[in-house]
Length: 243
Length: 243
Image 1 (cartoon, rainbow over the protein chains, first blue to last red):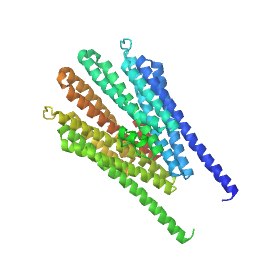
Image 2: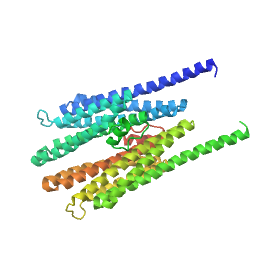
Image 3: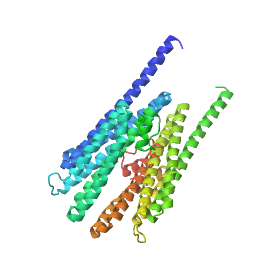
Image 4: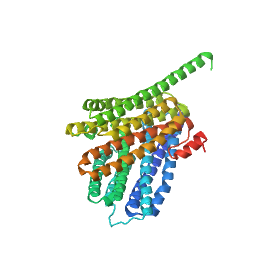
């Protein structure tokens, strides 16, 4: 390769890096929007804020179109370049990540629709009527934030924390289920409220699962090990050398 | 290109087609195993069959290793060939499909673990103790079967049926939830059984969602339209020209 070709090679490789960097930034922008959607959906639900709920529903279209655009860009980048195995792994991780992000957005939208439905029914509310949902919602929103951080920094240690948090979110969900059933048994008139709470908790629990999925792609991307089929303990032992 | 090169080109292209065909067959083999796992998990749960439950748990490792192997093969095929945009789309659809299949397998394994847990508790059972789970389980197993058929034949019309069936599965889930809560209110001693039923129904409902996801990849693959963000009615209108 002569000097001109080397320069050309560097130039192409530089442009390719720019494209990968651009993909990464677009995923983070999409993730930031999804995180905001989850946070807003929880507030809209817990505070019966119809305007905010409507905003979440409208913005889900933006989340969807971001996924389509990034997915398309990934295919184009692969078709245009001949990415190395490691770059390809990054692109595949992006394709999988945006699928999960889009589904988190869908769950946020569903929570917002339920919030609107509750407002429409004009039910009597006490202060802190949906505090369980708010608490679990804040926890899951923080998980989404940590997930995006782990993705942005390709930080395995940060990514390993999320599956553990997801176990906590699953426990929160189980506790909410049992608690609401106790409430219904004590006062059958509370059934409508309890079903709403159980419903929202289920959507939040799924958002937690999607966060966990994304963190597993991050770990796989960095470590090249498929950790989806490993227990958290094994993951930590393998990746951090903990015993 | 001279004749020898043409022959070489055909030979390479033939080998590439064989590789794609091989990928497709491996996905179908994995899907067949997952379908069996779902069916077995439901029977193990509904009939308290510990041996069958243990078999489902052991076989989930096979599902997992199939996913890892196919995922790896997809990356290698992309890296080795320079697939055309349409072949690339097929490979990306395979990557996404096996992710959903693996998660369906996980849900089947969770149902089997719950079945074992129930057997361990040695509870009193009446005939047809978990009939709701059996009914919904059969419905969802048929959805998985139809999904694999749609994938095997790249049949858009068949693929369009599954999202509609998924709405029915969602309704079955909602009905089971409400029904179990009524049972608990009538007889609080039924709470353990009812929580088990709600729990299994939730796993089945998720399996239905994963089937729907795969059918959306099939439609996207064939039609090149992203239907994930479209209502079922819009999908049918757009793809089948129905009004």
